[in-house]
Length: 75
Image (cartoon, rainbow, N blue to C red; front, top):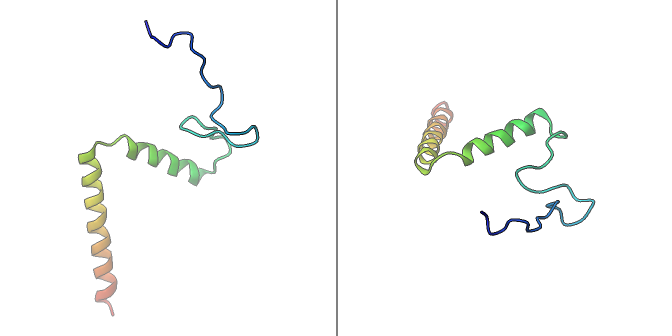
């Protein structure tokens, strides 16, 4: 059995009654489509392993470098 069995847990993650809840399980009903998309992307990124994050960042850096070279090459 769990040693914390029966221990009280906070029912709210807010500091005061008027503040929005904090944390992963916050209410998403008031998010726009773009905000919801960004939230899901952040959650997917958080689940990546260190190697997957490094590969993703390396690929993004390479794309930015190529785009910068394309813009500078046309001048």
